[in-house]
Image 1: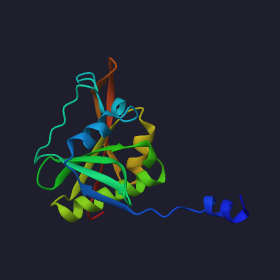
Image 2 (image 1 turned 90 degrees about the vertical axis):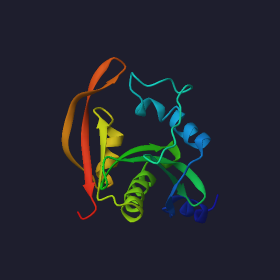
Image 3 (image 1 turned 45 degrees about the vertical axis):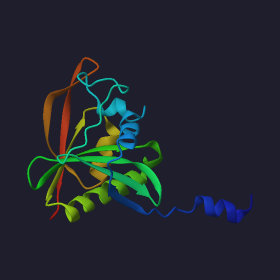
Length: 168
């Protein structure tokens, strides 16, 4: 390996993150069932990963995340009303780190541009430090807590409520 090879490896990689709606049940299912994603999106009332049913509906938007042609995972967005959307992050390990922040910002931009959405919210279970960091780095701020509102592995967990507005 030459010095030029080392420098090329160390140089920051340019990403070309894009968001696109997806309706491929197999791809969505494989993403949600991924062993590094499923434990973070389930609660004690959820079926097993193997029996998880994918619901395609006008009320749910599965937004695929791509770096060029490489699939990185998805965001699930569902409206609470015309202008308020709740978003759930399901990014594969290949997208973790700086790419995840770029993806989250791209998701917000896509929602603001392609829907009437004006506010995006999410809820992060206490203890999920990486998800909390991602939400904050993407521009969300904490606006409250939903105490003891998630049952996971027999424990009642608080959920941290975060949001961002289009105009902020």
